[in-house]
Length: 313
Image (tube, rainbow, N blue to C red; front, side, top):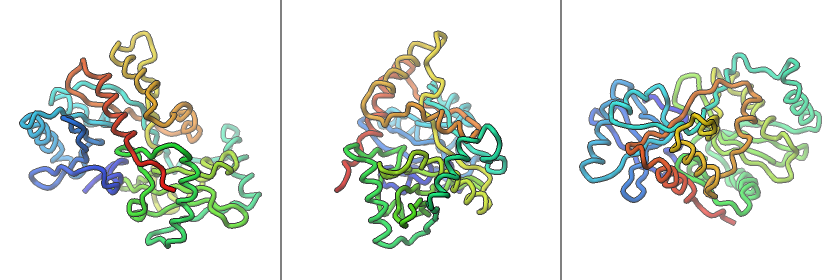
């Protein structure tokens, strides 16, 4: 079955699966009160996408639930539109073309300088494949715990540290000159030919500046060697959304919700960070039924994402 950049989050265990009658398409969803919140577009065969969307809406209507779709693509907007949905642009998703990515040239001098500094100082990159040893999992858990500090883990559309979840795909690490792990990213299959992504990106507070850049550069090279053509960097929330005088009032209100509620990690500067890799950007949207309930819908979704685990010590 074909997937997308959010498919692998199904291994977290915090969502349910809704499958089409013909078994050829499915949706990931969670229930919050009388709301069914679906994560991403349908997965599987495109010919069955319309039927699985119709089926989950019919079920929601029958039992008195409200159906919300979080992070849908503009590619399938016509299907949601035909079912009576309105749209709010959540942000934009970045995808790096691995064939054209380079750290050479004047405009990439900063990335190149950072990368060379780490190599000169003896840092090394490795990709480990499951099954992982207990010792390895404990070492990356230490990194994760230090990175989290007092913050709570997120869930639903963001991964959290869980050994069962992490054991479903390779993990990339960066080690210092003494061979100690200072940062890691878990590789996230997209279940699409030629595309790959990452989920958790965690490093020790004592790690040198630029550690994420170096890990990404190594990962881009690794992915290209493995035959991948595209690297999905995920969404930059609220990118170019609700800030102009021409934006709808409800969009400005929803934007204010995301900027001021304390439930989300701080996303300021995320688009600038990803822009360093010269990605292609595509829109991601919230699809909702009642055009007057956008702000309350955004609060509901952010609370659901934030209701994660407290850091384990």
